[in-house]
Image 1 (cartoon, rainbow, N blue to C red):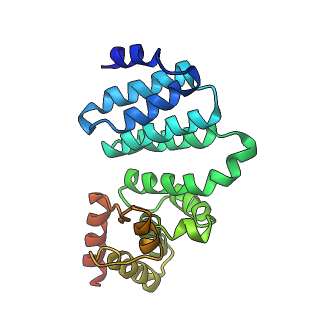
Image 2 (image 1 turned 45 degrees about the horizontal axis):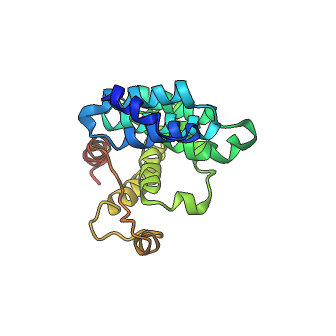
Length: 209
């Protein structure tokens, strides 16, 4: 598969070849995740001259790792995506990538508190109000707050974050951006991983919410 794609790339303008690699690979079915990663790494090695292409390649590599529950590699790839960004532009992306790294850290630590989780959370909440309003970001921010507030001995705040997170799981939940995004043809979802849902169930049992 990869060799056929390499041959097809020769017909594409060189400036677009890396983009073709990471956009095609991330759309592959999960069972082809090894080929997808190999294709994106090939694009990086051969054609990743611009920081935008490097950032997007590493970002999509992280998505593929995450889809296959390889959270350590996904975290590393999200870090690489941030580091690939030109220093003059990196600050504007830091909060966005801190959100992704925060999610991966929670999975890696089995939803227990870590100093890195606290660090990523502190940076992620510096994102714009609009950015934080997306359902997936709000949901995982509440998950992080449950963990952090529990660690800090603030059970009431943790329980409030739990209720906020579980409210978002209601099929009829409408977020601040839901109608706007729907008008643009995008159906917004929480995107809760099974591990996050299991954590909420565990928390409910421990605090009898």
